[in-house]
Image (cartoon, rainbow, N blue to C red; front, top):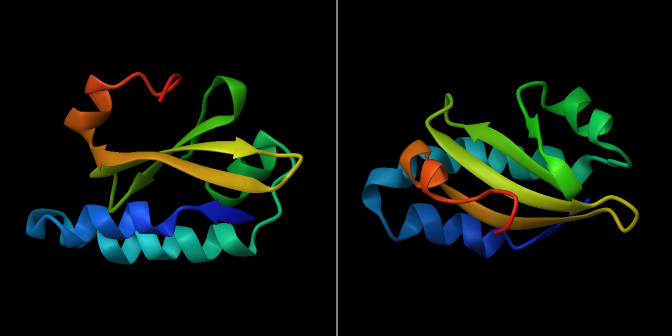
Amino acid sequence: MRIIALSTLKAFWEHTAAYQDVQESALAWYRTTCRADWATPSDVKANFGNASILKDGRVVFNLAGNKYRLVVWINYPYRVVYIRSIGTHARYDAIDAQTI
């Protein structure tokens, strides 16, 4: 899979010291996803059993022991993952994961 954009993840933990604890799990997610070949949502679930599959290609991943949420949009035919949002549960609760 091709991921757009790793810089979004890096900016999250680099700009706020309190969020540096997500770096290791975010990079592990990134490495696993780069090696993946997801054609369907069930392929995502096979790699990440705790991922939440939403409508229209949206997927929510739990990072750092479920402390953070990563929202992505996956274009399955082109094998591209677009990072839409990363944040705490409070930030996740304040957004509409289907529209960001």
